[in-house]
Length: 292
Image (cartoon, rainbow, N blue to C red; front, top):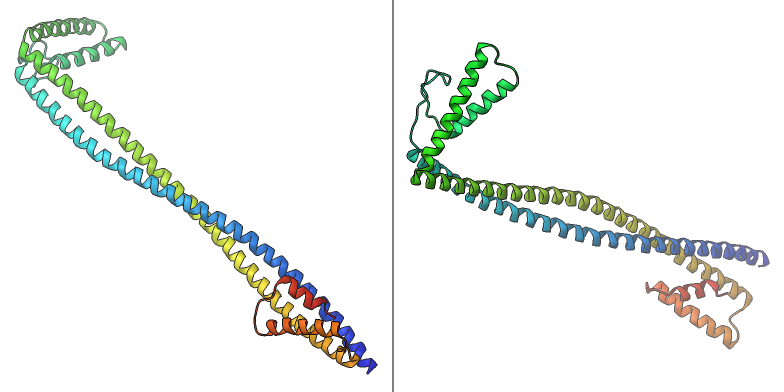
């Protein structure tokens, strides 16, 4: 009998040690579960905020793309106005043909102030680079004087022509409108592209944060699973512990006296709740483990 009691005492101490170990392990995993829950929830909140940013940038991009389409339509109208103004200017401008030197080639071309200025600038550039020397230099200088003279003549002639002057003003206004419309198209296109690129950046950040949130959730599930497993072993240890204590009390005839009987009834109530699957508080579980 004494030998059996000694064996039971050793088993009781061992099981009590195991119960304490499982309780500590369970509490540690529960602590980790809380930490992972906080991290996961924070990351999910950040993901929701980032998704909102993505939506905002997508809306901005769509608005800018719509604005680009509107500005392109305005630019298209401006292009038509420029074309019409040029046509009007050409119809009002007196036609002159350059036959004086054959410099512009065999094919006759209509001479305008713009074309003359272009030719003059070309000759001046060539002259400055030293491309015309000797007799050719004199020819080029003569040609430059002729072009300058024609430019003055044409400006005087066009200046006295009211319809031509009006056509030129219309062209200037149309070209200014065309340029302004083109700049608006460019600005809207740049804004749309910037919004698109920012949306892609936010999307990448959403994916990165979401992966971190999922990782935290996996860690949470792992720690919860480990906590539940440790809690299960803790409960089994408590049941074994009280079974051993019951046998020891029976051997000692311990169930005597009101205080001990009352404590025994309380423990039996707690064990009944535990066996029926009810959840006990930490204090109740520790009370079961301490009861002897």
